[in-house]
Length: 84
Image (cartoon, rainbow, N blue to C red):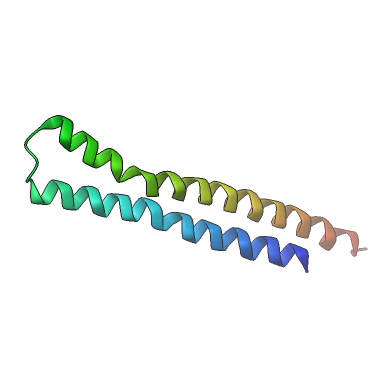
């Protein structure tokens, strides 16, 4: 039961983590499309302000991947012990 919970939690975190880079990419696309910012330093600041969601998403994806691998590893051992 714990293995399924770990896998399910891991995949949920991976999917939630993929939303962060999507939000950051959309924000950067909107910043480039509007082109209302003339100063390079202001443009760099506005782009760097959007990277927080991508960083959080990357951390969520990493934790989710670790949990899914632990769940897979634990499920793999229980299936082999009941054989032959």
